[in-house]
Image (cartoon, rainbow, N blue to C red; front, side):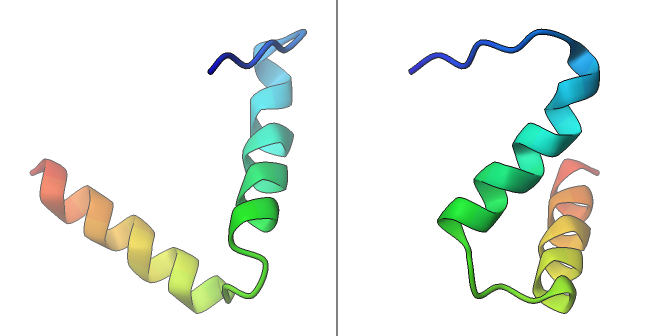
Length: 43
């Protein structure tokens, strides 16, 4: 699978759109918890 984009500045909006598409009912709190888990796994 490939994703073509014009500029790196578009990646934030692309990421948000993909997140809404695949996780439409997720809350901000759930996203924050997932982000914290990812950071903890990397250390």
